[in-house]
Each structure stands twice: as structure tokens, then as C-alpha cells.
Image (cartoon, rainbow, N blue to C red):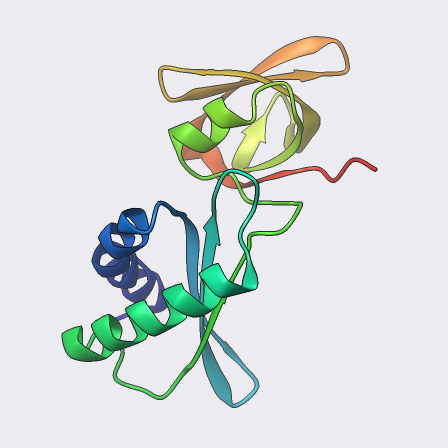
Length: 153
């Protein structure tokens, strides 16, 4: 099983458990860094997650992953908040953060560019609408390789 399919499999088995705890599963990453494999689970909730939320989720999902035998190598499990520059992946992410500043990177060029910084205006018909330098740019969701909030201080 490849890295992406392991992340998808883990997402499928842990998302219901995380939802039962009234938390949102933001992202799952499975990657090798140095000699170690890391499984990173990012959770969120209205008002932000606490250390206790992370510990509780860690204990809950650790057993589920082991029972389902999704991962066959040793790994380090990390459960945390997505941070201020939270990734945007799903329709509900784009709808929730309307009128926030975002950075979007696309797989291929749109209007001769792949990187867009601007204000997220809407998400309609699987398309992100962003205002960049006074113009509205339409970016199909399937064209987005990466999108995240821009930290504003």
C-alpha cells in the first residue's frame, strides 16, 4: 500500500471515531523522515483543540489502526491542531473560511500562474472563487495541489 492509500485508509477508519468526539479530522499524513515513519493526524474544533483532545484522540485511534492492521511498519503517531496556516482540502473548509486570506497552488497553470494569494470569496460547483489583486479567479477543486490559510498578524 502506498503512502497516499495508507493515509486514505487511516482517514476512513478514524474519521467516524473523531466525529463522535465532536472533533473534525482536518488531515492525515503518512511520511518518512530520516529513519522513522510518522503518522500525523490533524484535528480541529470550534474554538481550537486542547492537549487533552489530542491525547484522547491519540489513545482512541491507536488501537483502531492496530486492530485494522492498516500500517505494517513501525511508526510514530502524532495528533495535533492544524495550526494557524491550516490546510483547506474539502468543500466545508472553503465554505468555513470565506473572506479569509488564502494561498492556493495548482497542479497546472491558470492564467499563466500556479500560485495564488488572495481572499477566499466562495466555493460553488466544486470551484474556489478567490479575489486576487482586484480580480476574481475561478479555480476548480481538482486543479488544487495545495491550499492553506495565510497567517494574518
